[in-house]
Length: 233
Image 1: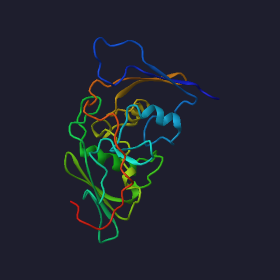
Image 2 (image 1 turned 180 degrees about the vertical axis):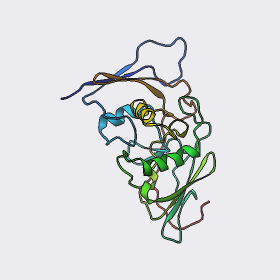
Image 3 (image 1 turned 120 degrees about the horizontal axis):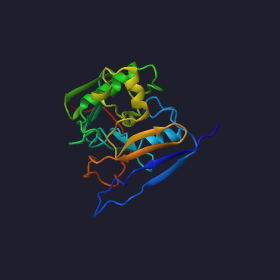
Image 4 (image 1 turned 90 degrees about the horizontal axis):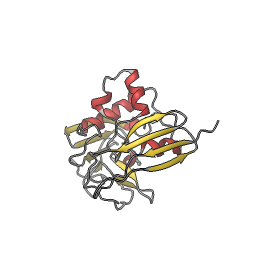
């Protein structure tokens, strides 16, 4: 059975000048998403269309198909000193989180959320794929904005990992009911909050009033980074 799903966007994320206008945006999708959990999703277009309005990661994909920083300040590379090969045949990648990023419930996003995301991907049996994350030996958090990922082996697609993050303060130690609720209305850092998922009918996303305003409207895409041996913290 084909389900026509209406995705209702409550308000635009751009700053308002004068009284807020009524109405919103209605997007139609031909298939109901089976889950909005970013790591349970099998990658169908509808799943991504819905959860991406609310969920962000350290990285995203530019229109040209190359990695672009979203919650990270830059894509790590040997050129900026944030990626290097190690002597054991692995690699070390250092990510820096943008300052002042908050989840839509007001809690701060920190490096602990990145580590929690990795640990969840590696331990949750419902995760669709662990590709890339299974090459990681450890994810270190020397401070709240710095993440150091140590790999057992080289991951040429390292710059695409952590394209979605999970909220540690909400999901750590959560029972099955809480995880199921998250999978229907995932908490994120994006411009919208998913507030309703009516099966077979619609998903409602309302403007995230706390969404950061300093982000550029577009980000210049960097070439896919290459790594070689060199100095990195």
